[in-house]
Image (cartoon, rainbow, N blue to C red; front, side, top):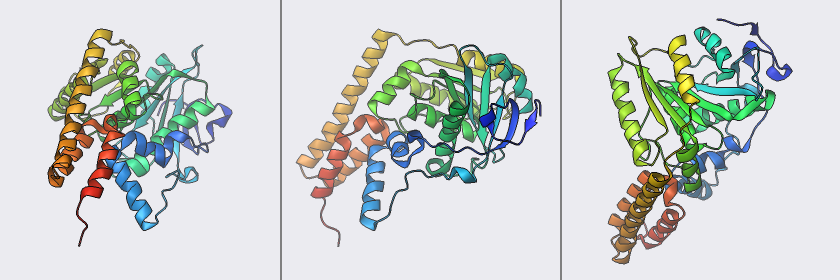
Length: 337
């Protein structure tokens, strides 16, 4: 592994590869209410709250105990004049490690790399992978001079799918996502956040897919994911392939080109964006009007199915109307026996 190895806290501004780091700082971003607001559909969040209230179960504010967590960082020796860039990396494995081949490229881009232990594919999303990745960002930014406009989230394989979730839910934190060999369609597999956050994602987030040329299954999913971004008015996207590579972590040259692309933001066409948003608003109004009509004729089953479909498709865009309709539906439903 390239770089100088440390086994100490990063609070002293240590550089190189830093292992076994324990962070201490929490933030609102990683709190349970904020995770649910940004990463869970409104109806699923409402149902979780209803269940907690009915069972007397308390939802903990912070799902992660940082005293039990360990992180690994790479910090380049020379900070750029405007501050470091930051890449939070979500792996599919459980070891917190810095890819040795990447350090010289991170130096070139003036980019800190941070990752965590035990956030692999077998870990829970909402209870672990999501909040730990967010805490990695919060603490790296607290300990080093990071340019907030150059904060990115990335991952490989299953970790890349987590990175897309977090980029979509936290566009006020992450301004780009590096998706290597893993992605999902948004608005179905990945819930949409509230309107203000989606609009920020549409205008301020750069998405770069890069997958091995010999990994056709992931390349096909990348195309589906890219199509879903276009449908939700997101066009600042680059779709790349890594020649002569299968389902493997990118080498230095591919990473260098990808990071250059990640930091090349293209603002959206204002006219197209306005028209695209108007189309979505019309589709949403029509979907919720169908639920209203089903309730008016007391067709509870149809109303429930249509509302669930709208919640899954439109996510946070449908709130608070979707939750209001769910409340009406609950009142209209016959009592259980």
